[in-house]
Length: 180
Image 1 (cartoon, rainbow, N blue to C red):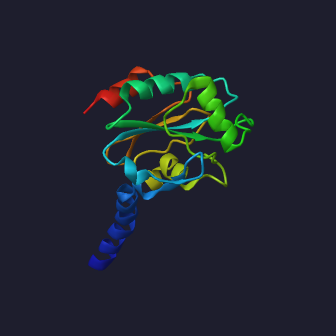
Image 2: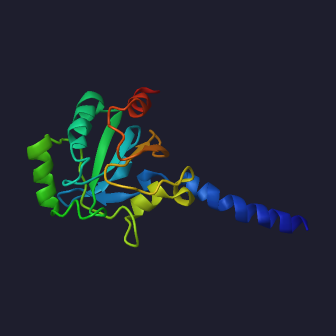
Image 3: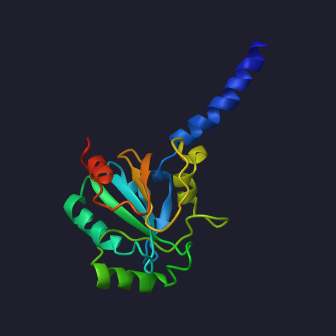
């Protein structure tokens, strides 16, 4: 009986420990220009991960995201954009077209990654981690539209998310960035 109780404890506890030990630092993604980008290079920084689109009602958020990055970006904070075409075909462009659009229309200087899928059968592994409590150990937060924002702490852990309509300079996001 004693061994049975220990076995039950291990089965219930070990998956939770494993998911809690995983961080964004375990992932390497591709930059919008095709180079490997290890998220481990962001250790010690707060990271705002945003799925983006060029033809969405939320697209003007690029401007605010850039302002937020100019104000807070540097050694302690970074924004990472992930273009995705999961919602009504609102990101139809190639990586090159997306990069040009972001630079010309919004002056984006924060890191942009290659276009990925943020939901469905072809969901990118990073977004599996971000959106599933079984992976991140904190919360379930399926992406509901373009410009959903995931807040990652200095240790690479998911600490929260903001809905797509939440503006980059919202009290929630600014307080999180400015907190110690």
